[in-house]
Image 1 (cartoon, rainbow, N blue to C red):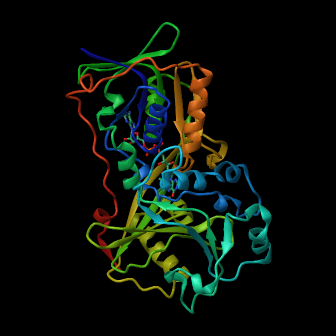
Image 2 (cartoon, rainbow, N blue to C red):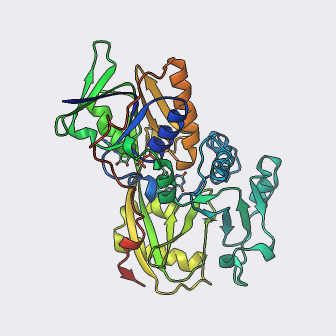
Image 3 (spheres, rainbow, N blue to C red):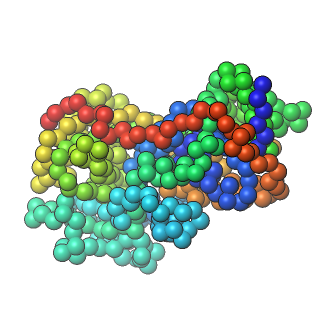
Length: 400
Ligand SMILES: Cc1cc2nc3c(=O)[nH]c(=O)nc-3n(C[C@H](O)[C@H](O)[C@H](O)COP(=O)(O)OP(=O)(O)OC[C@H]3O[C@@H](n4cnc5c(N)ncnc54)[C@H](O)[C@@H]3O)c2cc1C
């Protein structure tokens, strides 16, 4: 059996695994990723790519813990995109330099004064009519429009950038097809794939497998933490009008009715991707009912917009997170380190730098020092996964 020894094995090549691969390598550790399918092909490429700054969570007028934890993220990402941050993300496609928030009608005094408060300054600003993005520059739009300091990134290009230069270190291995070995102290000593005749041992193991963490925890008989899945039924509207929209639409409640992002397809078409409340409440609707609901919502919130050749489709996907009491949203990135392993969920793409900080802090606490250096020769002949393609173009088959 072929044997590999490294400092850190990460299971899962989504945003969490790839960011950690980059940041831990920068700290001098020898790191490899085991990825079952494609790079970013789990939740990451299905996400809307918004680098939230937490305004969405502050809509009820209270700066919650979620809002505080996420506040610094846009700036950290912006620095990375400019090449001056902790990772060099120059070349990643930025879809929008801001995310907007709009209401159908004028907002009440309570929420308007909340946005004007000092706590929100620099994070949200009102927009002069002259500066409205094209989609809102219409006489029929009579609501309020705010600009949030939240950027939107193209996730496949982010995945490709984070994998660049590391292809040899990302191995196409599904750990559910192999076995985990533990030593007498309960530390994880190695992962063994009899199919590939490969044994990989490491000083530390990081489980960043998103939804896959559940089965890994079971296989390793780790009772805590537990995972929760929050199912979503997202809606996609593919069309041929280049009209960008990156915005939350708010109604009377503090939860956005929907969050819409605009994506560009290889064939020259565009996809509007609808998340937020419609995706959460749409879980019990079948595809046709969810599309009908989305069409009603669309005509209600954007009645002045007509798109060329509209085609509607839906996508079911789960958010994977640490279990909370009452299926509520976790407040920050989650990392739990025990013995020589860490279990993590970023809970949001935007929070991955926070996740990386937490992992690094726990490795420092454990005084883990770099010991191994896998060579190109050591890694030769192994199979590597591709970066996942976008999901937009392939999903459409219902015409309005
Ligand atoms: C519809 C949707 C929209 C979202 N929009 C946003 C947004 O706009 N902004 C934001 O900040 N967050 C957003 N999120 C949340 C964000 O996408 C996730 O928090 C983040 O992508 C999770 O990354 P991850 O690396 O932990 O998991 P994943 O991206 O799911 O990656 C896990 C990887 O592990 C691999 N894997 C699983 N099991 C195994 C195994 N046994 N062996 C080897 N590999 C394995 C999988 O193949 C997968 O590639 C959204 C989520 C969803 C579902």
